[in-house]
Structures are given as C-alpha cells and as structure tokens.
Amino acid sequence: MMRCAKPPMPLADRSCGVAMRGFGHYLPLRRVENAEIEADLGLAPGWIAQRTGIRARHYAAADQAVSDLAVPAGQMALRQAGLAADHIGLLLLATSTPDHLLPPTAPLVAHRLGLSCGAMDLAGACAGFLQALVLAAGHVRLSGQAVLVIAANILSRRIAAGDITTRALFADAAGAVLLAPCADRTRGLQASVLRSDGAGHAMIQIPRGGTRQPYDAAQPSAGAGLAMQMRDGRAVFAQAVEGMTSASQQVLQQAGLSASDIASWLPHQANSRIIAQVGTRLRLDRAEVLGTLADHGNSSAATMPLALSCRAAQGPLPDGPMLLSAFGAGTLWGAAVWIP
Image (cartoon, rainbow, N blue to C red; front, side, top):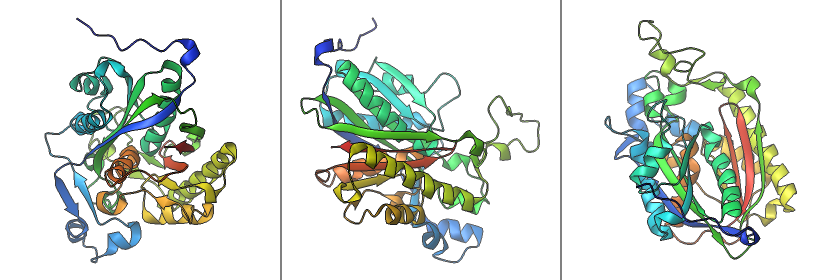
C-alpha cells in the first residue's frame, strides 16, 4: 500500500522559519592524489595544486551509480535530523550525472531511503544545490513539511583521459541537507538571486546524449562526445568571478546586509583562484570560508552540501548570516543569504 506524507500544516501556521536540521555526505573509497594524474599526463609535480588548489579527489567504483552516492548522504542527514519518514514532504536531487535519462533518479533515491514523498531531479550543474536550496526553503514554508536536498555527481566518467583542464578539477561526491520548519521565523532563506545566460550554453558541456546530438555508437566521435568539454577556460573563469560577485552583491543588498555582517561564506568549490578573487571583490575578510576543495576537488553541485556537512561535523556552524554563491554550466549563477 502506498504511504502518504504527513498532512501539511493549516494555512494560518505556514509562516515559519526554516532550519538545517541534518547534514550528510558520502565520498567514494578511491582517493586519487595529484601525483597519479600528473605522472599520467607528464605534468611537473605540484602543477595541479598550484593552479587549482586541489590536492586530491575521490572517484566512484565501476559498479556505483550516482544513486549509490546520494543514498548514504541522505541517510546520514535523516539520522541527524531524527525525523520520521512521514515528515518528509519532498526530496530534491541536484545532479548532472543521473543513473539514467529515464526515469529520473530522485524517486529511486527516495525509495531506497524509505520515503514516499515527492521527488525530482534538478539539472543545475554547479549551481544545482543553490537552486535546490532556494526551492526547498519555499516548499518548507508553504507546506510545513521537511525537505531533503541532496546533490551528487560522478564526474570521473565524464572526463577525457588526456584533457588536463577537466581531469585536474572534477571529482565524485554527494552531500545532503535536511530542511525542516522551526518556530523562529528569522531562520532560513533571507534573500536569493538566481540568474542565467543561455548564450553561454556551450562553454561547459557534454555534447552528446540529448536530442540535439543523440548518442550514436557507430560514429567514431561518439565516445568523445560523452566527455565534459570546457571551451575557453579563461572566459569561464572571468564569468564565474563576475557572476558570483555580482549575484552576491545583489543578494546582500536585498537582505540589507554588508560584507562585514557575513559570518560564513559557502562558495561553489570550482577552484581556489575563483574563490579567492570573489572573496577579495566582496571583501569577505571576516567570514569563515566553508569548503573542502583541497581534499575533495570539484564535484559540481555536490561541493556545497559536502562542505556544509564536513564543517557541521566539526561543531556548530558560525553564528550569523551565511552567504552562498555559485556558478555553473548553462550558464547559471546565483547567491543566497541564509540564517542558520
């Protein structure tokens, strides 16, 4: 028999705060140090770390799909939150590497977690978690039900072996945050800015596999078309810095805050140079920067909840407003202010 989620709160009770009640993450067992990639590509020792700030990353096993990463991350967040399954009203899965094109992966993840709530995939690339968090906060306030947000990717299978640009950066991981209503109305999402510019859709892409360029095994270039391609890395760098900076400035203005009010900053973990430039432009000198880039690389949408979960494992998050900033393929970018 199909189970129903807990009924929504009465309309009069829907003005609530939103709390991050549980965090979770999962990293595949295989850890790949820079030395392995540098030796394979004939790079000087230290080349990758100097340019990206990354020392290592994790790769999924051959028999693992993205749902196999998402489920343990979700389980960890649910255990921390201590909520029964019927309190979860929605599961959002931010991923660019689903188990398959059809059906969506989120319902499978929900099923394996013992949930029968609504479930949907969000393909927002590196901005996917930020988009999911904004949507999830609205759903919590409207319904009074908890929402589980998971971001997971297996990017190691979308890397061309000889492509230094993508192989130095990308990784596999999953992170999760359980959002739940709380009595303190000041907690949760305070302001958000989500932007896009489809003119830059080809800057970072996996060309084949969709309806524009269907996969055809008979074509000699079919395999290469399934690998991630980054065209004009300098242009991507410049747009990422500009997009994250401008969106962050706008969201701070919306929230009536200045950079000095920010207690913590959660940027997408693209590479250390982008993070450093955005931080300098925003003058976030007093904010604690949340991130795991050096040890875990760039797992696209998963970097932000992974960083949150790893930081939460060390103790309470900094007391005060949190700024979130992201930029990804599409092109998509945005920012949000959250009160933990």
